[in-house]
Length: 295
Image (cartoon, rainbow, N blue to C red; front, side, top):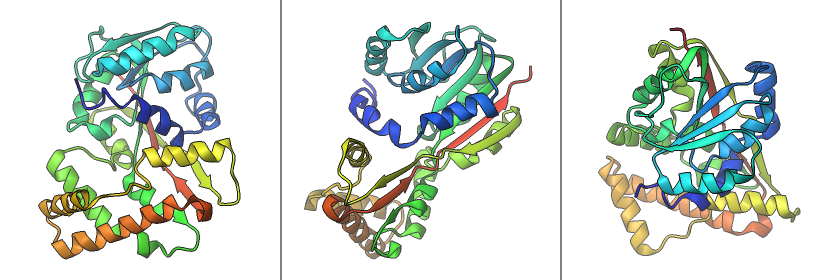
């Protein structure tokens, strides 16, 4: 069992927050300029969400290989992909030890994966190994600082619900402690460069999600539910509050700093739960970074 074995529902609900399909089509046609069939390997594929949205945009004959360490998610993917028309397969494997021959794929891609891995360079090394000469490496990764800075709730002063300075320090300290990095998206051009990937470029996802108090429809319900799954609106009991404050203090914050921040987080969640008055804008600001393997 892995930490992600029970995350199928979460992944299904949240993936659509971060990416617009028409923007992915723009990347395929205008930026990556993929005009011939390609063999794609998806690192940390989960149940294959990226394959489901990307493969119909690629030239006919393109193939998809999904790789994930979670056997539970891979099994979900195999079930879901029974109805797709393109050739595909799934492999249960860690991201830095894929059982595929070198120079096998035209494109190696990952989506919200490197942020969870303490040694992203080792994954890039593996992506390069199984990618053909002149093949492409693509990452789509988060920027938590940007997400918090771009969030807007009408009628509420940002400083009352979000302490950007606290969060910036928090993310830095979490990175120092765990080596995982929720702000890795904007760093990917430098990380790719040090791994000798060439002709590096980057784009920011154009996905912006809007909730309006006066609009009640299926799309609004879906966005609201997705944001709930991503943690918005969480109601903490006293034990959970104490645990969170202790965690902040373990990361070097004073009790006063931790308590002040938690009060703002609680206020934000209270506002979010009052959907009838909620006018909110949320932008995930995911970074697509890509470059080419020269062997």
